[in-house]
Image (cartoon, rainbow, N blue to C red; front, side, top):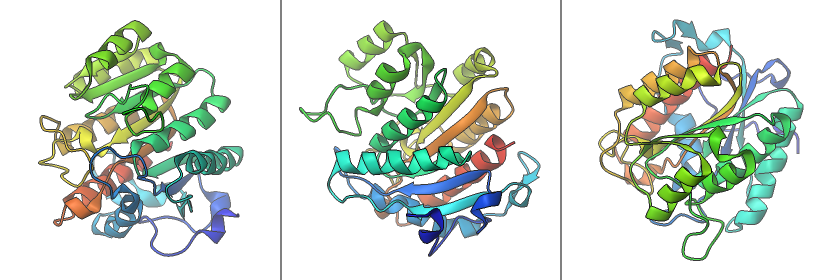
Length: 290
């Protein structure tokens, strides 16, 4: 299937209809087959696009306008409902095509398991890849109640693929003892609770390296983003997440892909959560595409 065959319905604000001119491709991964608490994140990508119209195309934070960059919104990948293994193969195939075209993949989830096939594809092209992971949960389990395909497992799979010392985790405040022990033994850069200050410390050592950024919206406190499947109190503010994105944007790392996952619109009738997600995506586009 060609990218432009999916280019229909709502698109993210400022997206170009010209795939050839695009630096990046936005795509949705509407999967929530393995969530452990509340489903509904499969509706996140579409709603983030719809509410993006509330935002200006200009960012005073970065002094850039979306008209200065080019990105194509390919819509949502038509995934095999209820089948996580097949869905992940479909995601990997799609992202592989994006990378073959020389475009930067900007993914919207969907549950966090969708990050695993994306990072696996990006790692094929960038063997020295590092991953920056912002989340309330460690996601380092080998399985969740016996199921290895779970949104509690993607960072374990990623660490085993690219090596623990290449994984940087921020904002984690929900984890098992086994996950903490694995993070320590694997050499993961594990930063519980805090985000901005440890990030600023880590970025200089990643200068010049390819980096993949994955943001689970529940890294934010539920007061700032209640519309998610597994809310966890004690998180950061929207402002701190914006500051973290800007710190990455102003650093010397080379962002070769990113995603924003776990927005579940049904649990936020105010629509605050998808509106926040859309603003974060705007800043990621303006900050990571150079």
